[in-house]
Image (cartoon, rainbow, N blue to C red):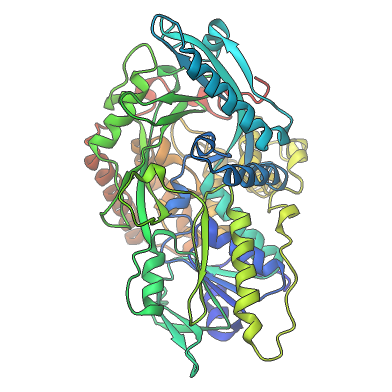
Length: 580
């Protein structure tokens, strides 16, 4: 299909004028994966997203690319195997976004003595993880004694600590991964995508087969409703997938059981974890992750039933207290809400099992289903396995929807297993370009390379032309002004929140400092998007309302990184090292 610009206006015009082989509803990681898989097979494909790309679940995960040790305990060996295989592929296909890091599981016992049964069970689980696929990255787990364990996290309570296990998994910026998949589909395979374009209806032919998606784009001059003509539709709307199914079936099937998961961010100095750590939750059968990120550490996640508005899940005081109780039970010292610099709440689109058990016990396996009218719906799954989920979904479209078309000649199979994402090319030589861009500080180039890969050169060129674009965007965080301009120009960012919440992750790490940067961010975006002063004011006010609602929902005080001792020295990579 060639290439197309990743541009909203051009994409909407194409959706009005052209007929597509497939339309994808939902712009999270699953929908993005379907878009790329189908486009890479040669299909003409379009994607519509009601809000911003990754605005739902896909920007609010634990940011882990992992197999999931606990799924072994639940007997989901196949899920763990699939996830670890996909982890290896992501490390190869997006090395600038996915990073191997060590994970520590401290073991506690009364009086420093660990029950033998627990020791044997955990040791068996670690070997099971390695044998299921952990070995694929060339690193096996190891047992550490108490002193070795404390060298990785000296705040652990030494009097209860017995030993630990160290194993390896990976992390990734989930929202940036979504953008990379979408832009790869557009810039390399000719797909089109548009955010802020909700699907409001489905059309059908005389035989009752779906042949169109009616959309109503938001934004100046684009509020008219129109129908995208298509041969097939994939519903990848996540927790909203039942709403799309209702447009087809006439009733809400109530097949999704949303589960809320929240995370909080605190200063790294309060925890001092050199690696990611898995800690138990007192009085519960769960554990949470404690992951270092520069001068900060984030902690999560919870796993609870959710019945509130799907568009705006919030962290409650009870949610935050749950995580603070968990971390305070595993470190010396005490963290309070005054230490919480950021927080986020997301909804997992779990497939309902018909029972009333805990959401934590529901399967994370994905499910592909097809309606009589041909709507293909993909639900469940994990961030790590998005590519395989997408391949399965497009296979369903090819085998059971397109195959009914007169003269259908077939499509090739999935080719994404070894497909590098945008930014992979040239990633390993970005820092060599510093001689060409002398205005770019070395630490800024390193930061940009870790987020944009080979595309970092484009941002470095912007800074070379205007050195002010190397200025810090948000105090205490490594993001620079050029990223706001690049987001508006090349990544379809259309609001201050798009930039501060998803194109960068300033809001989840430093909520109130990101608010202080809102006006500067709007002013950087304005020339790219044609905003006048009144629109700039409106954007700042809208973002302020979002931040204030977030703070009020969690009953959190205002916090700033500088007052908590987190400053410019925290720029760049986290303390974690894959060589641990």
